[in-house]
Amino acid sequence: MTPEEILAYPARVLTQAQREQYFEQGYVGVESLVPQDVLAEVQAVTDAFMDASRQETESGNTFDIGPGHGPESPVLRRLKRPDEQHETYWKFAQGIIADVAADLVGPNVVFHHSKLNFKWFDESDTVKWHQDIQFFPHTNYNVLTIGCYLADTDMQNGPLAVKPGSHNQPLFDQYDKDGNWTGMLSDEDAATIDMSDVPYLMGPAGSITIHNARTLHFSPSSKSPVPRPLLLNCYTSSDAKPYTPHPDPSSHTYEIVRGEHVKWASHDPRPCQIPPDWSGGYTSIYAAQSGEDQAEAGGMM
Image (cartoon, rainbow, N blue to C red):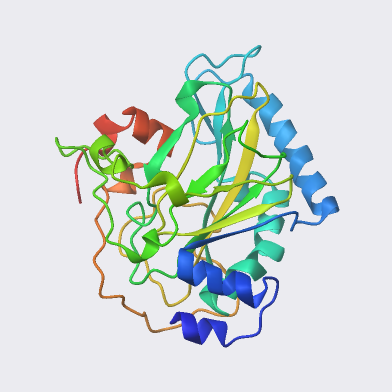
């Protein structure tokens, strides 16, 4: 669907101005959107998973842990596929957040994936400049990610930052010069980004961030000793069809959360870089950007 077609549908949650900003700038942030009772339930479940991760010694199917992780000093980088780890996360993905997605991709909304990322007081927790769509190409770019801050977020604990209008610019190469997948821009490409108009999306717990899958984004390292969790849910329009293996499918991947499946794909003529063959598995963007995944993800399809 085109932006004009999507905007012709009545808004469910967002204002028309917020919807228009998303299509013009490739992002929008909304403070304190999630109801307090819903937020409290998600926070409680997240705290329980954080405690459970203390007993882990290496990354696996549920947790992605960083160097130095242990019972006394956990470094939980990601809870993988939260939508299938606990019913609270899946209920959240089908709730008001799915209505937000419908405001921006149209009435037929497909769930793609979820993840719960954490920021720690550690220079290694920087997420470098990257674009999402190269991880999971689709036939068109009605693909977006909605993040929900589960803790108050400001410049002290690593907010999401975006480059306005970058969703309408050419995509970047996210392989290094040796052909290894890095999931990020090279230092040379990142240095070309004009930071003068880059907004940092902040807000109290329950605030959301929305960015298109083509939009350049990153987050700086945290300066706070308290971990900052960000629950991310990715959705697509039903007419945006994937054409490479899913990096980390869950039991809910490709489920319709609003509307219905459509039988015709819409094709955007702009090209998209092909990622490595994810059919053998994927860990996290932290592992990719640090080089941990190069042995597994170095070859193209």
